[in-house]
Image (cartoon, rainbow, N blue to C red; front, side, top):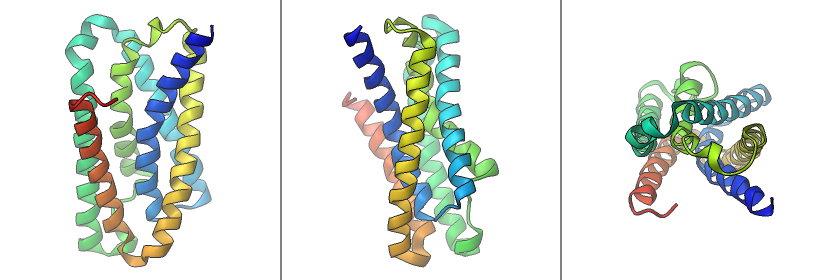
Length: 187
């Protein structure tokens, strides 16, 4: 039982790392209390949903899609970061691409959860009931989101009006770093 619990913890924490990194990028621009709840719920729901979809698709589709899904998520993360930079420059700081609601929140949620699709293919085989595993993933995601947003907000307060550009760069670098780590099998 201890080994299974460690497996669940390892999966939950590894999935929460990208949530944490993206949350820092989102938090740099500053978020309201309502946005914090919305983002936390969205990120956790995306992580759990993609794991469920992955578990449902099974091993056959997992071998075909699993490895590629994470790279699609990393490219999407890079694209969201690039778009944030363009919007911050074009429209000014207060009207840039908003990752705390609407299409921006959907794009951020999907970009961080596509790697969960690949994990979901094998999640039913770790020896723990699926509900327990998903609860651990959701909890880790919420904690990572709240921590990342708080840390990002502190950074944003220090950099002021360039926050949108810095947030975009952080998201782009995060996408590149995660892609390189996966490519070189440093997981």
